[in-house]
Length: 114
Length: 107
Image 1 (cartoon, chains in turn red, purple):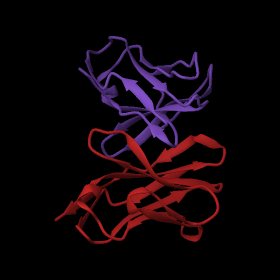
Image 2 (cartoon, chains in turn blue, red):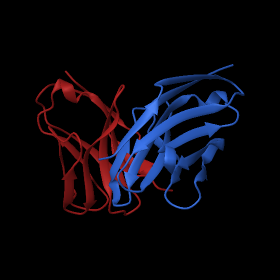
Image 3 (cartoon, one colour):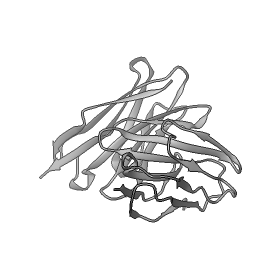
């Protein structure tokens, strides 16, 4: 069985500061890993994904994440927060059998102050 | 552009009154899924479909039905809704495309 743990239900940063959202996963097989963003009253938007290959993955809106197998982590970072980054972020894992196994973390709300 | 549409966006109903939430994709893809989102619990999978006439239970299937008669559409059916099914529902063509959500309130 797979699982995802997102550390911190809320993370607060100042505009211009580093954004770091933590995600650890559990999977018995090589995982596919995803980060999604959800703005108020909207659906989920895929930010980035890791399947195979390069472990540092770049996504939209200046976000990136690094797959670290030894740490079973896939933390999301952005060098400089913008007010428009305020949203809820979800980490998700699936295995290579297919996306029927896509499992989400409980989410982290990112708050950005001026 | 990959798109998933679902209707209605908002629905208030009473206990026991059957309802259907429609879902449609423009990608002709085999795989589709339904999730519910509840505060503090993230998204949990209700049902998924690997192809026409092929559906299977997710993590929280109780009280729900789905059908997949054609590749494009994947409706979610609540035959006898109860208050614990009050939630935000998302249809998806994972991992790329999620619908805008249906906020359901059952009184």
